[in-house]
Image 1 (cartoon, one colour):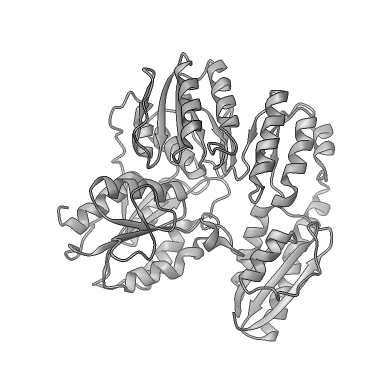
Image 2: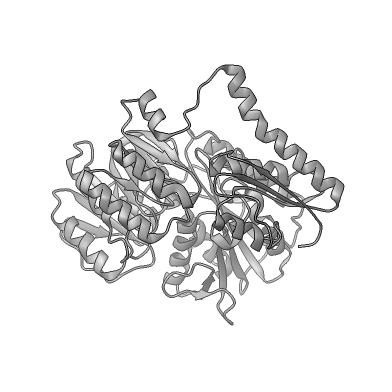
Length: 500
């Protein structure tokens, strides 16, 4: 990466990853800045910033308890100015807290003393320190949700075994979403209470199913995020099995939906055997999997939408409340779909829909039957921009929609693109106005010969962004809004086949 670099280190200064992502976005928007990142100075984060070209390979000024500011700008003046502004932004929360006289605990122990009735700790620290903080919470008798990523799988398995021995849940690491007793945690949505319990290895999978159930008139009893590796052979579904025990005891839960990518075969057997022993009814939504022999109290759903419909005894959800804008201004037959997603499970679900229709699909996170990106003749391309390759040194696209800007513009200009498929994910912690961002980006570049653009909006009208308002903004940019992510993929298929 060319340009002038500016680097700063704040000794012993901690902010959680979501706050740092938002600050990184603000600094990146300063005139003249090419790239900016604010991260804790752990070895893994230093590697990320070095690989992104933000730090020199000889950088060694920070340790894991320090905050690193790394900026590349067009010239020295712009780099130094951005570094100064970053430091001013970092000082703001401290000044505000002092002005308001608020007290912020520095440790889990002091937080627990201040709130002795709490029974759950949310850990959002650099991955190198997450396991240690989680162990402190367990010793205090707290359930733990680990939002942090970059925790070794061996540490995860050890933590979960320790928690199991104490009768406590460890949700995560890399647990993006949970809803416990009606309280949304991390990237979650505001949905009503109801009779359906969710267990999900995926954050956006939980969000999509919970929101579709809410829009269909139902509600959620509990949504327990277990982390993307819980159903791996290395972890053995420890939290999933404990979550099943918890929902069995929960009198508010009548039906349970489990959402995950395909588990390891032996782990799938464990989970299915445990499901068979439950008095409740289940839906298993293992995105991209098939061939499981299920007990009498369980059904299989191949999409998130089908999983949500199972909460209503399988009846079709009446979600067609969004007036559809025209999809096509010209024929799109024999052109390709380009799917540009912020949610990994939404990307996987769209792949499943296209593959089931006999289409060739490529992805950076391919499900069974899809090809890796770059394979010749692989057909439609569906990308997950929340994957590590796109978020090194950058905020997640749910926080900062600009991460996929370049790809959206390139897809509009690509004459082989028939349909651009997008997801817009709302909720706590997500961008304040993702639809407005797309409206401004696409409105400036769209031409008469541009491809059709189809989006889905995961969220509810009780979310901070207000789903109906986001839908209206997208439609005002002539973006077609489908009722669900699965419907968006099906509509894109209809367009390129000329059957709309």
